[in-house]
Length: 138
Image 1 (cartoon, helix red, strand yellow):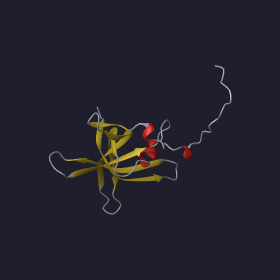
Image 2: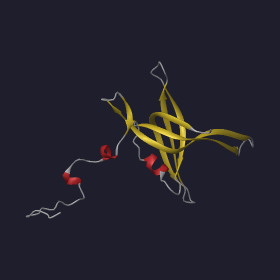
Image 3: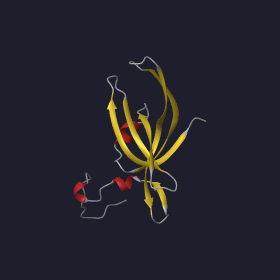
Image 4: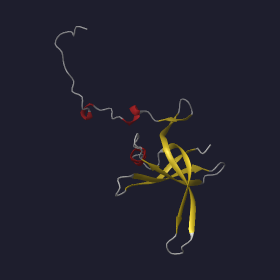
C-alpha cells in the first residue's frame, strides 16, 4: 500500500492560498534519529479537501508541537525552466494528522484532546450563566 505515518516535531510550516482557491500547507516534521541527539526533517504537504480543511488546520499547529501525520507518497514531476530537464521528487502528502502531547501517567505520547485547547477561564466564556430563583422542574 502507498501509505506512511510519521511522528515528530513540527519545525516549520507555511500556508498558501492559490488564485484558484486551493489551500496548501507545506511543513517540515522532524524525527529524532535513534541513539543520537540529531533530528532529521521531512517535508510534507497538506491540502484542503471537500470534506476536511486539513491544510488550514495543520497550519494552525504551533511550531515545536509534536504531531503524527498520515498520508501517501506522491511522485511530483516537472520540467526545470532553466535546464529544460525533467525533475522528479517524491512528496509526502498529508491526509490526516493529530497533535500529540506527552502523558506522564502513561509514559507515552497521546493525541491532544479538544479540552486541552480550551481556555479554562470564565471571562473568556461565550456562554452566559443563568441564575434561577426556583428549582427547574425536569
